Amino acid sequence: MALDTRSVGRMKERIFIKKAKEDVTMEEFVRRQFGQAKCGAIEVQHTPIVTRIIIHTTTPGLVIGSGGERIKETTEVLKEKLKIENPQIDVQKIENPDLDPHIVAQTIANSLEGGINYKKLGNHYLTRIMNAGAVGCELLFAGKLSGERSRRQIFNAGYLKKCGYPAQTEVLKGFAVANPRLGNIGITVKIMLVRSQEIKDLPAEKAEPVKPVVVAEEKPAETTTAQ
Image 1 (cartoon, rainbow, N blue to C red):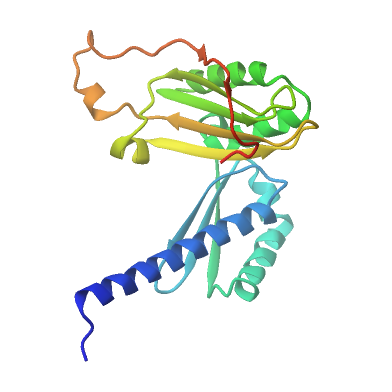
Image 2 (image 1 turned 180 degrees about the vertical axis):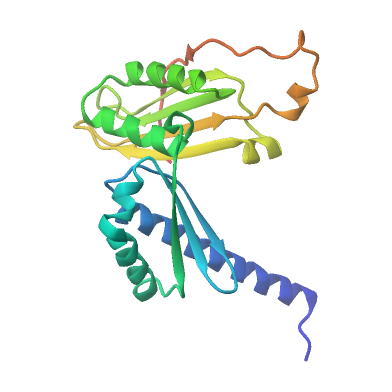
């Protein structure tokens, strides 16, 4: 008996969710595998023949290893533990790490663990990101920043889309967790590299100018965990 349209839709939805979970698991494994290297975005591309994993990093030598040993080791683990058939790992060097939100978040997390003040870090990296050519950026720190009570601190500058399709396609996002003495701090980094179309269409004199660096007021957080 033929399946009805609703059953086919549910089946496709289950397949899509399963594939998305596999991709997330694969990305988390790759980040753990190359924890000493600074890895940015990790892309997973599925083809009928291979599963291609593209790793963007500022330190390709640490990912590749001597004679490609680490790549070969990771490929074998992907086959055995994650049951991925014919995986291929491609390593791409990040030319401008100040425009990669994953790298920025990791660097800030390492600096927080080293005892550097979060306000100094927030303003410093806002300036670096905007000077590197970003249209806008936002840094969100959430956790035990300077005491037992958890707080949220937002640093932002420039023009950044908050909702809609441009916010999904034009805003790059990265996240990292720092583990200083007081407790965990989550760092979320958002960077917009391309000015949205509705802003492009405005006359030059009406276009919104890039705002100076602004530090948002501190807000209490209800929980101690960052999302």
